[in-house]
Length: 246
Image (cartoon, rainbow, N blue to C red; front, side, top):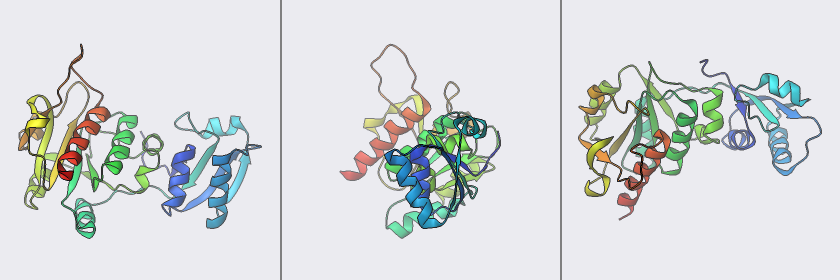
């Protein structure tokens, strides 16, 4: 899947891109559409001096990579990857203990986008993904993040286990989502921390799991024994938030 196409689709994603100061070269808008969100987008485009082109729904459908453009597509400067050190610097500038999410083998762009959105809302300082066998920053990811990709940096590393070792030297502890682990309510998740989430089905790989300090289980009371990766990330991220607020 092609990365960094620079195409942003969907009303929320485009609005947040403008508000985050992202450079929008051209805006494609459904001809005749004058509802509230579209008018807001057009005002933001006018402030930035972006070119607005009115097109048919058929043209937007042809351009769309997600199939859910909601009447607007922005042609923007491509999303770039951060360095792991940028995430730590972000925490330092905010005067907070580092909190990062590391994703092991997430291949569904909707899951990645949703996790980036949750990371932003939970106050995480960034997301780390592996270079291989995982989805990167695509238009679908940007759309699924609902604009959070404009605010939450994503770093790409060659080796996730090595990145964990380097971050341990910076004082971070690591907790891994694991159905066979200790209940998350029994773990101390305060302090500088990295939350490791694996792919649905396979979970976190053995080599990465062995690098972690704790394995956290989400207590479940239903009839099935698994959760969507982005849902699991949200539950564990907010347990970390809860403990930090105590």
